[in-house]
Image (cartoon, rainbow, N blue to C red; front, side, top):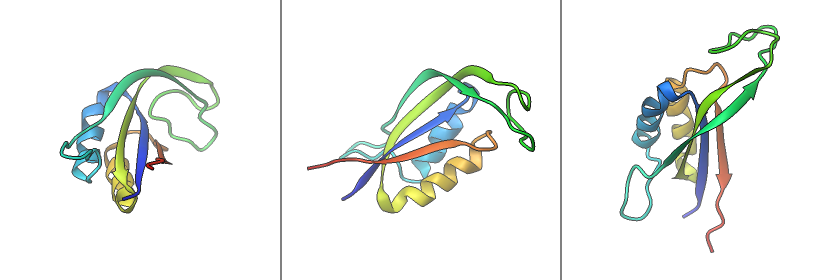
Length: 105
């Protein structure tokens, strides 16, 4: 079974919505445990470019703010459904959702 590590940056106000979407789509299963994830606060930086409609910040200005990083896992075949579920509830115009392969000997 090939699994992926999922990393998502999200404002704290939307952590529970993103976690619910993530887990409803099948992510977070580790052995006989479900809804496995971790969340911690991080400082994010971004600069909205012309044409952007930022959730937070102003076009042209470098922004910095508190976000949360969510980490979990999913099977490779779940990745598309997980990504779509997260995008459906995420407030950012361009959500940061990373899928990283896991080495499992």
